[in-house]
Image 1: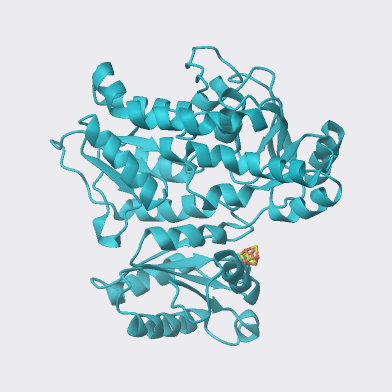
Image 2: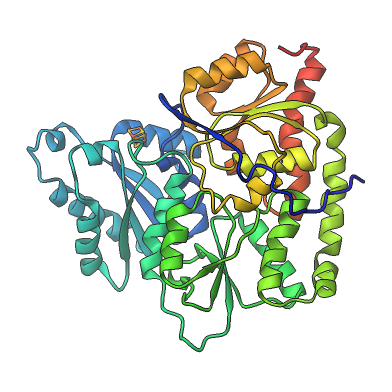
Length: 430
Ligand code: SF4
């Protein structure tokens, strides 16, 4: 069993310089978030107002079977809309009317903006207000942008959750302190965390977004906010503006990150250290045992992160501290210093950090460093594999349940698997 290095007060990369990149990007747009958001809020529907390209992206990213009734769709903006020959607002009203008549189980409808809807300046927030007035109390209609002009990949979730914040009820001033966990987690992970909080006597705990649209948690100055995902800048800002107090913690990846994340909540709620340790003990032991099995494959291997999901810093922290990997460069699309404060402090001093994307210069650095493993988007993975590099798709890390003690081993395995495959194929390092 490998030991987890206890968190020290060293400053790690807190004040480390960051290479700022501004150039061509190779990432998905924020529409991708619909793939996991629609599974989470089970009575919500996501109507993308976009082009056939947007429809194809969603269809292929979500892998929906054609006979399924998915809870997302694309209202196609066609040539008549683009040429101004049709009133797009009227067309949208008609599509929404048809959809809601056919799918009465929908309680929350998101109109999701795209590049084409932005180009023709279709005001979806006005449409959402108008349609909400028409369809409440049965259906609430909200809007957010998932366009590639405004958002990258995981920012779609941030935009969606930020749009939900104004709908959250106000918690009474005398309400007892509540823990609000923000960010989409797989149901199985959410249930595990709920059990751990219950075991330490911490509560009430609420998760945002909820599984049902009508179960939005109340919020106020007694709400203590624990972010479960690192890409929720706008959501956190909106929740804090409603009075929530954000707890500083690393993200719940790996045994160490999960313990520190839970500890932040336990400290805020005055849970005794012995009670906390007793509550997490068995799950933490399982995590340490599961990750130890993958450490021999990963320790000493050099890894390079292209900026993609904003999960890069917590992943790099886990891989370096718990798995013994060496970080050659850790790129992230955005570096939110206050949300990442605990992660930066835990990264090894001297780690090369980059923010934003300039794909050509990052490719040059990656080739020069010749890492053992490259974490990147789908568009870069195949060309890099053709050059002899071993890659890991960043998108898999967003789609898989990786948070919490009981997923720590799976998380390590996601990185060990491509290295094992290369070893079995007998392919020498690039
Ligand atoms: Fe492409 Fe923009 Fe549609 Fe995303 S929103 S699929 S980037 S056209």
